[in-house]
Length: 346
Image 1 (cartoon, helix red, strand yellow):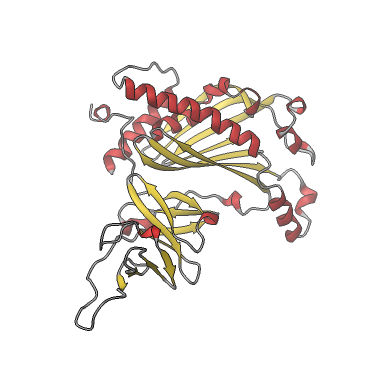
Image 2: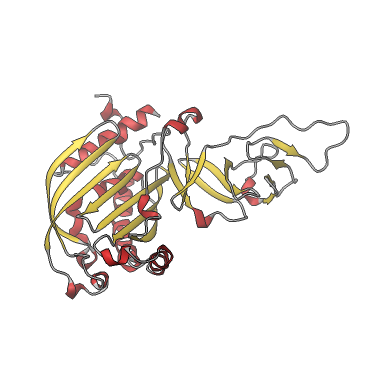
């Protein structure tokens, strides 16, 4: 079959999607360099604070523009001082003579958006960018959610990470860090853009009292109770919900066939606290900001454990690329089929 002809551990990405390449707070007055599937991209803010995304390359001597600095609305190369505007056109050469014209060189401009605390880049066909939306993250600004963010940087192909996230059976690894137990796959659905796995599980947490947040820190306070656990590969990202209290999102930024960056977001819902909703929005915003990162220790712990396993999988693959792995969870087969389909579509 054509699908099976693509080695899943070397599969490329689907380019016609929005990818979260940085947090908004990471892009300041200085250029910020990122790599999205072998493409070096430079982010910067112009005088109005608007995000610009350009190919990270000066066409003069092929050095990285991100070594330079922002001058008004342009990016200035550190080597010879050539300047390029937000559209990628050369607008200034400091030693240009009266008899010379500006070089007719243009570097690639990427569609870019700043939304819900992240910088999103569209690496595909630019004319398709407006018709496709980045993954919605309403919880980022919503006053009823407390957010925590953990950065993932793993020396492994992105397929290992998404398989890890979609397979709830690996909770054996996480001991006291995981929020659920005993997942049983109840339903599996797939299309050409997503895979949805619905598990019946037992949750350790119930956020229904003002002190319930303490369950994140004291395992002795946790009590198992049944909750639906839904996980979805909304290509190229991942979303999971545990009952009504928790939502976890992973925003993927594949770097290469052996390197993946991502952001893991954990949202704790405060919807159960109706009295809190009646308080002034300024006070609720203060509470939201004060509690930002409340689940940091748990989230960082989960990431560290998963990354260790994922990187070991990658090393095993590189040492024995033809070795067969045995899989019992049908979710993984659907995930791999979607990755191959997106890789073929380019």
